[in-house]
Length: 344
Image (cartoon, rainbow, N blue to C red; front, side, top):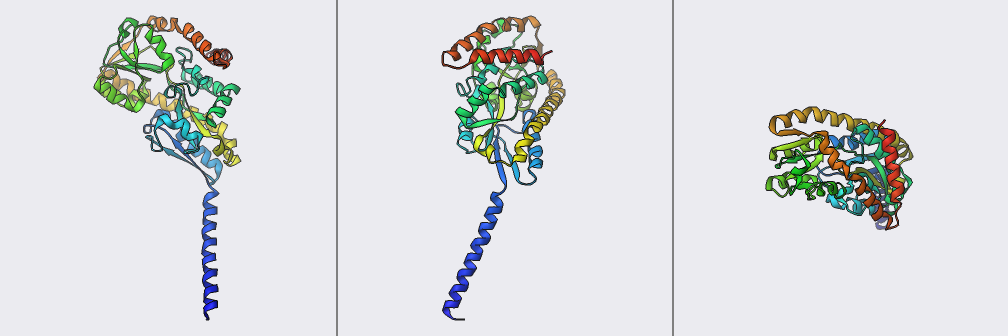
């Protein structure tokens, strides 16, 4: 074989290898992969995304994979909206209270004592709100994203090292709760202090906060706050955070049609999985709390006193949002109608 023949053979071999490589890359790129970010480890609230994963992957028939990354592995939780917007991750957990002014209309769901206490009713109301045209537009325009999956939370109670048996007991107490709910507590002297869920254990241990508002009961157990607390309430039932899952719109549009078509049914399965997980958590954690803590079952009059000022807070929210050109009155009335419908 002469030199020219050897060179031609080497070139052909190299081109063949490149072609094989390109073929492999093409095969790999044919599979759609979503990276989903959530803080903390597996717990009741993650039952939703953990249920969505097999449902959607099955619909994708091998062409779709949903990778769940726990404990902020893809980036800080407070940057989730920005990271989803630019496609640094395809999808993520969001909680409106972590992102002040970033989901202004959706913050309606964090108004105190607006959301139903019944879990199934709350899930239904949140689904209605997330499908509202103005909320869809807000998520799309601000964050290049759309609603992906449910992440509703049970009503909030308080656990910590200051005993709360009445509204008077809240005076001077550093209480972890989101901004809009905080206004109901401030009226009775509570001192709202915002820390994220994973920071709760250390904050209670060090006394940075006195009492931690959290979804009852699963979150207190999942983050082990009972280990550094003396007291817990039952009966306040505050609205707490509005949490949900979003996906980047570009990623959504590039996803196989079979996966997109499967999402509505998968969301219903995820809703039921979450409710079951919360009920299972209650059976586990409530007896443990009764063993290790003083559980104060509050008289309904305490909740009634807190809720008495909620209407004024709702109206203040409407005034603030409408001054910025947002259809807040329409959204609030929609939520109230949805609550009435699903609370029957």
